[in-house]
Length: 247
Image (cartoon, rainbow, N blue to C red; front, top):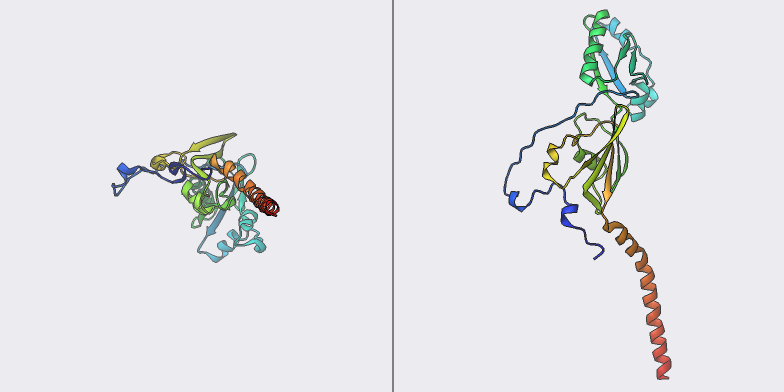
């Protein structure tokens, strides 16, 4: 009885029997736009056909010891300062906090072309990491290389939910400006795809709560060996007493 888990609390995207025969379900894509915040890291690449200008643009110091690693993204990327500004080699200082990646790329591109009319630029957010905690098979810090990343993707990245995960109680801790907000989501509902916070942001902390049956089951598993030993000892005592009585 302690090991029983309600079906509705263990299943993801429960649609109900009456809707199962519907072959296609359509949901509107809702993605809250992420805007850069202090301490974000962005990767900025330049492209220019003229080899002389290209050499100037690519002359930003690079630590090759960390290339192609998450550490390399941090060491070689451009950091948004605490005051929200971004210092870019050969361009200057830009107010980056509050901008989307596309808006930042447009500004950098315009400023770059003031000096180099035919230069191109690419901007990517490389500090997209999330923490997934609680009832998942691989909890911890995970790096994301996809700007359109949803809650199901995050759980898959963390190895999926454990057998004691309460899919009806998932929390997302998110920093918005100077505030920390907690959003509560129910993954057992099919309408989760319409939820405004279904898509995760950089630095989100996702916590999957355990079912109430977990501590009971865990305690039961802990005392089971003790009960087994007591049972064996009781059997030995009974057999010994029976032998003594017969003699």
